[in-house]
Amino acid sequence: MTEAQTRSAARLRKRYCAALRKELASVPQLRRRALQDMRRSLDEYLEQNPAATWADLEGEFGSPRQAADHILNSLDAEQIKREARHFRWRRVAVLAIVGLGLAYALFLCGRLAINHLMTPDYVVIGPAVEMEGPIPTSPPYPEEAPLIW
Image (cartoon, rainbow, N blue to C red; front, side):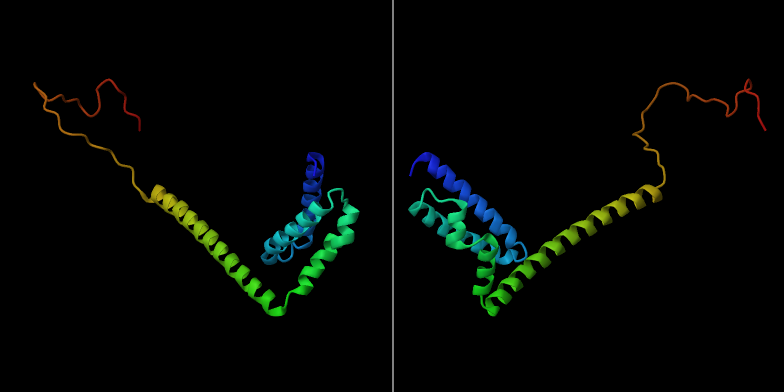
């Protein structure tokens, strides 16, 4: 296979798999395995037929919608239930983690708000410093300042 044919085959495989991925969007628990199998089949076909086109792929494998329907119809009910159960647990775990993260963030925001509202103002008193000489004093109200009632 020449380099141009290799690039063309890779683009064709990528395009077909992207279309198949869209068709299998409703069953994400089966999508990865189905796409891996389809990539292998496409690689084998494109190695044997390097000048294949989209029409050739659709003739061999069917349209992406037909391929998705074939994949879903080939699975038995027990396998679909097992895959769905596995996916459900993963979804529940992700939702639980996200919920706990949001609850913790809400708790921290509430805690900061309560601390801000309930904490009285305070003054930090530093260490005592010994001074020499008389203690400075000043009257509480200087005589020059007028009293305002």
